[in-house]
Structure formats: structure tokens, C-alpha cells
Length: 250
Image (tube, rainbow, N blue to C red):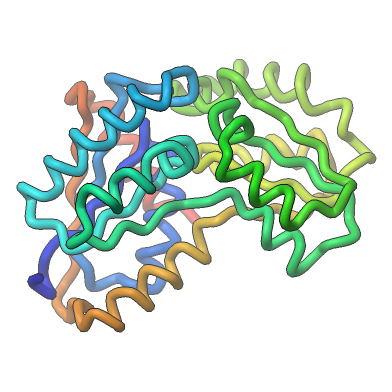
């Protein structure tokens, strides 16, 4: 594999930009191609077979682009498809995002915790094994049906209304919030406005470190000047604009 080869990263929409942002902090010299599958967004309401097929199609596209590593920046896709993809393409390293529930165990075990994720993630075997292993018995699970969609559309009023309806009951009850969907770090401020001073956990910083370790180990670290390409399955120009706008924000 070529050191200057691209790193492919995909999500059902632009939420995975929160993952790419963390990666670029420690790997600024890499070449990235980001694929937003807005045509099939959201993945959370699809069958396992449909999700696996969509992910496989994107991986085949990345193979044509000669990607040296592929990142699954969607928790639903990670939980439903990564096993199958690793079996089908053993020559390609896959790095998959996971809900950061283990981090609660490591850093704030005894504190009441709210896990916000899509229904697909919360129902998945992968997440339930994680929960069983690290359960602090003070954990609330919330399937945020339709929230990623609202974030994708960028409607602030709709997002605030949704959060008020669904998370107000946890005000004063939780101290940790696990952001189990890559879209959710984009609305941390809005979540905090309702829940107060909570500690947020998301899997992106750990994924970035893991990716760097893999590139080092395989001697695939690039020393050039990194480029970022963006593709959307519907070719939506406003998605591209918003993607680069978010990427520049801190």
C-alpha cells in the first residue's frame, strides 16, 4: 500500500465530520476522502442487510480510490457491518467508531450516565455486549429516533424542540452523557443548555489515536501536505459547504 494513499471515511451523512476533525488534529499530513451517504440517510431505520449492502458499495468505491485505510464514522454502520467488511476485505485495515461507554467505566464509573444513540446502535449486539461488560448500573439508554436527521438538516429550532421533549427528564439525574452517534457532538451546547454541566464522552479522540497506531505499525504515515476531498451520494452542494464550515470550527 502507498503511504500517500487516501484515508477513506464515511457516514450516513455529515456527522462523521466530528470524527475527521479529531483525526486531523493528530494526523494533519494525510490525504482524506469523506463520503456522505445522504441519499440513504438515516441508516438507523434500515435492516442489517440493507446497511451492510450500502457500506459494501462505499467500500468498493474507496478501493477504486486506492484508500489505504477505511474509517466507518457511523455508529450504526460500525455495529452492523464492520465484521462482515473485515471478513470480505482482509487486506484493508478498517477502523470503526464505537459508543464511548467504556470511557465512562475508565474515567467516571460511579456517576449516573445517559447514553444517547440511534435505535440501531442501542439495539445492536455489539453495543449490548459493551453495556453488559461495563455497566455501572446507573445508566439510562435513550434511542434518539430522528435526532441525527434533524442535525443533518441543520434546523436549530427543531433540534431544541426535540431535545426539550426527550432529554428534559434527565435534568439533575445524570452527570455523564455518552454521545453514541457522530452527529451528536455538533449539538453539545444545546444538550448542555438542558442538562447543565455534564461530562461528555464520544469515541472520536480514541479512534484517532488508534488510527495513528495502525498507520505507524504498517509504516503508512504520510509526510506530505494533506488534502481533503468531500463526496455526497446525492451531490448536494450545501452539504459540502456545511461540511467544510464545521471542519474549520472548534
